[in-house]
Length: 251
Image (cartoon, rainbow, N blue to C red):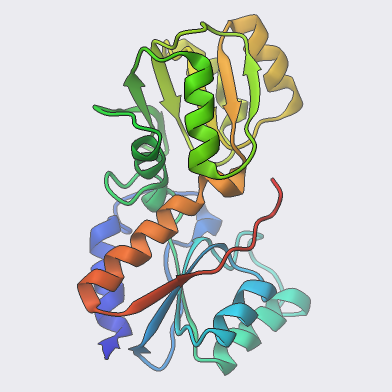
């Protein structure tokens, strides 16, 4: 049986938790400890009452998250937060969260995993934020429609497309999650086809003005890759089973 402390030390080092700057409420790393035993890992994009209840039902005692417990910042322990804490503590479920450290990891990261899944090779980091590159780009000459089909298969769902760039791609950029509002900066980095999760309304207008393909795969869908890959990595290293708790938001 693996120790929680051992696993947390491994995760902190593997993901470079202490080195990567993030938004304060991400609170990367261990958010709730348990009785220091881990027999089954759960992976989920977001923490919620539903995720914790399902985790308890599946006998999960370590939950790996991309969006952790305290995204709303300092708040009283009432209502939903009280309910979530109660579920975690009563069911001995530890919570470990990794936001930017998981997005940008070169092997198990959301960007790297999505790029590999749609067949992009020789990717390079791009788009600096919080002191590090948070996206990947690749030179790839692909028919736009073929890329969209690959993306739909990878995400197992719909992709909103704003086809204002070249019909054959030259440089593809990926930032999973909600980076659509950065479209002007993206275009400034000579990206002609940009893949992200979601965007504000005005970004569709900007895509046309900038002459860029904007492909939106969903915030949730583009960020399922990292927690799954991380759980699989830990499962192999510590010989522990894992399960993915799928609670899509529709966004």
